[in-house]
Amino acid sequence: MKEHMDLGLPEKLELQEFPDYMRISRKWFSGQVIFMTVFAIFWNGFLWQFYADMGEEADVFSKIFPLIHVAAGIGISYYAIAGWFNKSNVFVSKETIEINHKPIPWFGNKKMKSADLKQIYTKEKVTSGKNGTTVTYEVHAILNSGTNTKLLSGLEASEQALYIEQEIEKYLNIKNSPVRGAVG
Image 1 (cartoon, rainbow, N blue to C red):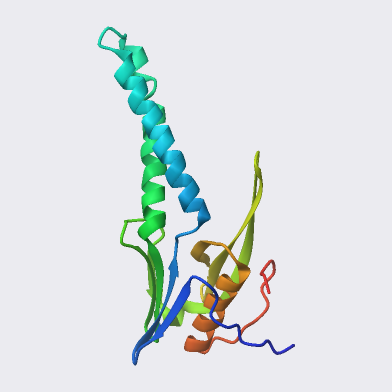
Image 2 (spheres, one colour):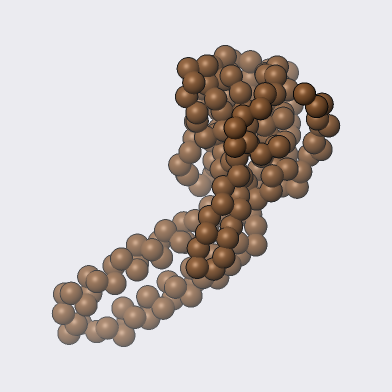
């Protein structure tokens, strides 16, 4: 098996090493967050004006139907706000590995025993839509039980995911082994 050169610290990542653990942080902010913020402002502004112009004589259906769009506006706004402020943190110690997303609450927080980790690997995720194809990267773990679990997703560059994989494996002395479908 070929030896791999260690990756340097990629953009948007921060590594801090402490006596008992290490922390890898990734800032969420990107150009997409700016776009989503502008979109949320226009979307919610349109809805605000729509309801303001509706008047009190509008029937119940006319008032309730746009609530789907209001819910979408709230979701888009929440996503944009999280994008401005959030960081994903990966805490690794000899005892546990913990992933959290803060300060705005977000799904995907995990905590597991480090001894349960058998292998860490990077996976490419390709999403096709009407505006083209988007490629993001995920960091996965294979547990000793054989279960596969996603640790992080939405990474913009393969270097970010591969660096996180590399540092977790290095810290926990996990030998890098090939995984079918893995990047790298």
